[in-house]
Amino acid sequence: MRRPFLSFLVLTIARSAFGAGTGDIEGDVRVVAGSVASRITGPQEVIVYLEDAPNVGSMPHGPFEMTQISKDFTPSVLIVPQGATVNFPNHDPIQHNVFSVTPGNTFDLGLHKSGDTASTRLDSPGVVSVYCNIHPQMVGYILVVANPFFARVRADATFQIRGVPAGTYKAVAWFPFGQASRTEVKVEAGAKADLHFLLHERSDAGRHNRKDGSLYLQYGPGAAP
Amino acid sequence: LSARGLAVALAGPAMVSIATLAGIDVALRSAAASESERDADQAARTLAQRLADELEVLNSEVRILADEPRVRALLEATSIDQETLLDVAEETRRTAKLDVLGLAAADGSIWALAGSRSDERPPMIAKALAGKPASGYSVDANVLVQSAATPVQFGKHVIGAVFAGRRLDDARIVQLGTHVGGPVAFYVGDKLVAAHFERDASPAELALLGHVPNRGEVHLNGSYCLVRQVTLEPADVRAVVLTPRERDPRGRRRLQFEVLGIAGLGLIAAAMTAATRRTRAFPASVARGQS
Image (cartoon, each protein chain N blue to C red):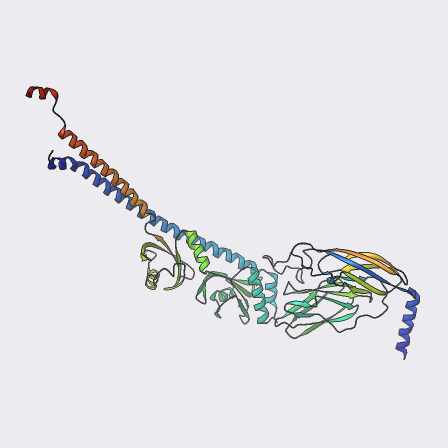
């Protein structure tokens, strides 16, 4: 009996703190390819989220899973709430060593063989880069969100975030192939805020070293910088 | 002028011409033979140097691979399985543009030979696991492979070995032949393992070539060739390079015909001179006295 009451109380306090009114954010994203050999397949790879919005409303539910298959992470981009546990099942016939050196979410799951699942809890919001210590081509990203106000950009390059409590927030457009774009957005109750992002692809995005900072290969076309 | 007189008059110049012609022929043949021998020796030296250079490059590459952090980390890991080792070996082989790449753990229990067409483990891996770098030639499914192996070490402790190989396939044999200026063949013992003239020569000729000593001559594909051998590592692997016994026999023959032509013209000129001397008119005073 006490839990539903507590939830109701928190929600009521939150609503009074941030104002009962909510507004929407709508906009579009333009992605500029870095070269003729661009890895971008479309604007759907962009995620727009609010960094400092309050954690009110419905957050994504687990279980959260990033599979290792065909020496790749699937999905390559995963969105999880702050504090979520992410599973890394290995569906390859070979071993992998999943790790991250992203500050705040550093982990090293060690060698795990085919069929095994390793897990880790992610506590700091932001983008976590996930790699395999054996296979340099394996790159995955986990966006740890502190609130439910995020959206994946549609194929027509537009996005919409609904029911944002009125206020001024830092909006971020992030994609795996370059620098994120940040801007401030003011949301007014019952109104629609427009946002436009321009992102530039970088050819060196995703390149990384091993967990100890060393290069995977010191020479050859597969060598990391 | 009698025929005998003319013959006597021409005998001298003719003998001189024949002697000159014979002398020129002997000199040309001798020069051509020496030149061919020099060419054959040079071809063998060029081949030996080229093969040594290629092996040195492979040695450098395998040393770099042994220092690769990913390779070292894998060989150091105690729980690594063979599939993963083979996968990494295959990826590294493609990256390093090698035909064969082998990885072996220190105790030899886990090893992977990516790109190999046989299950045989090259003997060089055992040498490398014993702590000694090794290079030379090995045979992989009847194809000769330039090979190098080196230990992977942490300090003095050997944690594994890396093996690298490049096949001496048809394309590379032709390249070698072009580089040294003559057909090249490789034998392991008496067995021919690579040659780019294999299709043109008979099995008997090829077998014969395998028994030719370090310097020799063979009749191959309708012409005589000088043979030079280069002994490789291990010692039963030999490279054989062929050079034609005479690089330019047509040139020599042309020169002989030119000399013969000049001599012939000389003889005709000598004959005409002799004939003119014998048939010239009496002086006028002698003619008047007679009348």
